[in-house]
Image 1 (tube, rainbow, N blue to C red):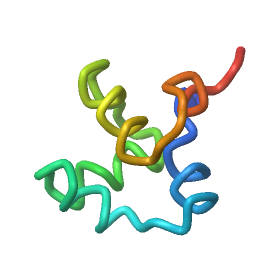
Image 2 (cartoon, rainbow, N blue to C red; image 1 turned 135 degrees about the vertical axis):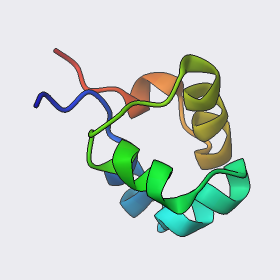
Image 3 (cartoon, rainbow, N blue to C red; image 1 turned 45 degrees about the vertical axis):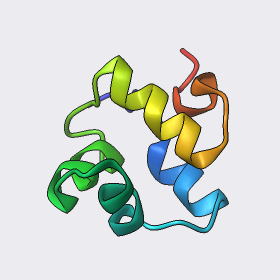
Length: 65
C-alpha cells in the first residue's frame, strides 16, 4: 500500500503521540493508529485540523509523489 500521509513522522518530529492526537480530535485511538500506518486516511477537514494542532502546513502531512 502506498503511503499517502506523513502523520506518524510529523507526530514524532513534534514529540507528540497518537494518543494525544486522538484526544485532541475527539477520535478513537485506533482511528489515529490507522492514519499513522496509512491503513486509512483522514478526511480533508480532519487533515486540516491535524495540521492546525501540530502547527504545520497541511502540505507537510502529505507525501509528495
